Length: 278
Image 1 (spheres, rainbow, N blue to C red):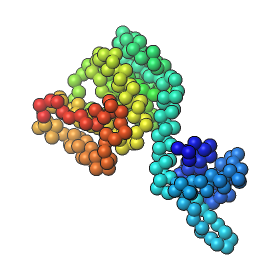
Image 2 (cartoon, one colour):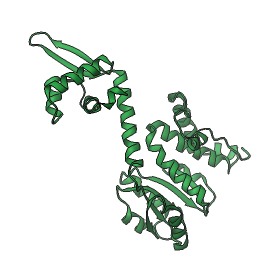
Image 3 (spheres, rainbow, N blue to C red):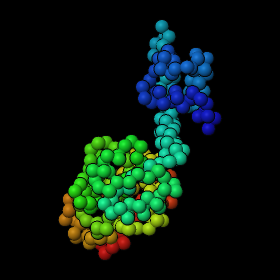
Image 4 (cartoon, rainbow, N blue to C red):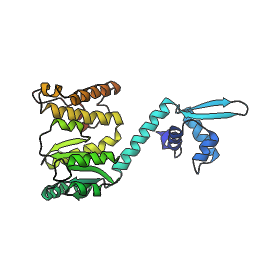
């Protein structure tokens, strides 16, 4: 902790992660405001703590390069996760966009969430897209709306490159088409205040996980949802379901323990088993 508590140490680690190996002079040029003395002392401490390698690439003239060790790269990953967490949770007002063609439901969901979040409202697909911005953290999206459906809105959100969390809200029983939908969670309407607020909290928390763990949680929840609605023989006939299982198996092999580091709610999602007749 003493290492990362110093002002310049995390900055140096991030710069070497971004730019690769650098000489002393290159680091000083790219770190505005750092003195030669502070840079020298910082590099020595990072090397002594096993976070940087100091490599002599030329004896005459003397040239030394600094690069991250494996421990240094691990530290950078932790710092990145902490920064992402801070952006979400040190910001007092994460923004939730509620989208439904029923104004009563929009008002109900907004009322449930306004104590903790900044809430925007939209009553059709086109309105949802006009309200969408980088400031929107979560979209609560009705799946079936007249005109532009929730599925179309979701596809557009992903096409535009937004990494906004999307929770599908619907009275429709889950079908196999959800295999083609890139959402983060699925809630059957109307749901309860406790269910909805917990789901919003859960999907926001996932920003602190690495990409593979996030993908694993989404796919495993989707698998459990389908297996609670369909028998195994129906699912086995759909190639998309088999692809989902293959991807889950790959992620499980790449993640030592899919439940490690998760909060209680996501640990439950990671270990979901079907409760239907499958």
